[in-house]
Amino acid sequence: QVRLQESGPGLVKPSQTLSLTCTISGSSITAFAYYWLWIRQSPGKGLEWMGRMIHDGFVTLNPSLKSRTSISRDTAKDQFTLQLTSVTPEDTAVYYCAAADSDLRWYWGQGTQVTVSS
Image 1 (cartoon, rainbow, N blue to C red):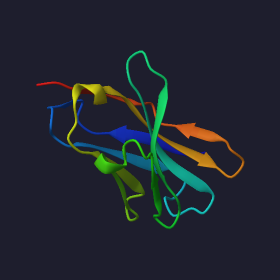
Image 2: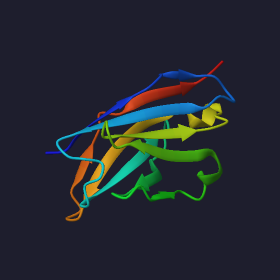
Image 3: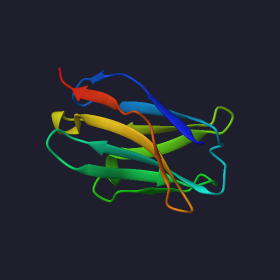
Image 4: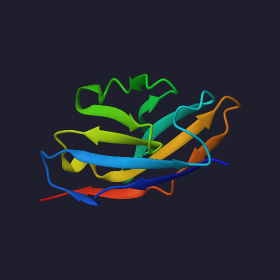
């Protein structure tokens, strides 16, 4: 069973960079069978896919966020990290890391609230 846990600051100032890390247990970030994803949900809005990484580290990003988003990984720690630059209050959301396997089963972290405010 894959388990995911987000970590990072809950408060970020406008114009700064948001950085969140997802720690994987029960599998490996190099496992062939999974997509590793970042997804967020802003107040009153639906889920927004931010980007995904596959076993070899290849990343696909949401075009609407691509200019501000990066996803990297630490294979030694089985972690992947989201960075979102130049944040504004509109980036206030609950951020989730998730995994989807080849059978389209989804695994979710508990989510972490990030507020952008001065």
